[in-house]
Image (tube, helix red, strand yellow):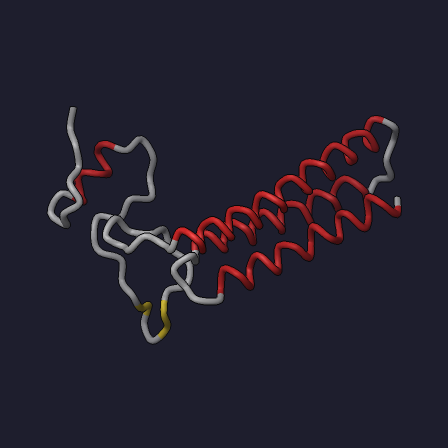
Length: 136
């Protein structure tokens, strides 16, 4: 069995061991031209985020996920009972927008305010889904 040490020399071996892509073979640049990179997969040598920060983000995203599952079940019942033509695409759009913003928040976990702004922004489309589900 091959193991990967946490040194920069053996970081390139991760692409051979791990069954998925996304591993960078070179250190991630801190800047992109004159701008800082906001969204990127954490590199192997990045510091771990604070446990409290990770826990708070996980709880917020879990609450969004549970609300999304509840809305999804209600949408399924509406589809079975015959929904309007606009209902499914609208609910799907706002649900996927919320999921995309949550994913973006975890990809920007090393930034100070960006994850929190993205989680707050992810709450808005889900609230729209809740509102549509309750009113329709």
